[in-house]
Image (cartoon, rainbow, N blue to C red):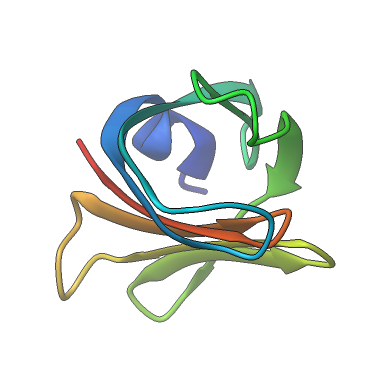
Length: 96
C-alpha cells in the first residue's frame, strides 16, 4: 500500500485565494507533516490558518481528503505539484 503521507509531506508555498474571514494573502507557506501512513498534520506560517490533521485516500489519480471544514486535493494527472486546500473557510492554492 502506498504511504500517501510521505508523498505529500514537505513545504508548499502559495496564496490564500479567498477567505470568508479576511482578505486574500500571498506568500503563505504550508507545512505538511506525516503522522501515520495516510494521515498528515497541516500547519501554516499564516496564523489565520489553524493546524489540522486529515486522513488521505487515493481516488483515481488524485490524493484527497474531505471532512467538515477541510478539503485537501492533489490532482496528480493534472499537476502533482499543486495542492488545493480549503481550511476554516479559507481557500488556498499552494505548490511545491
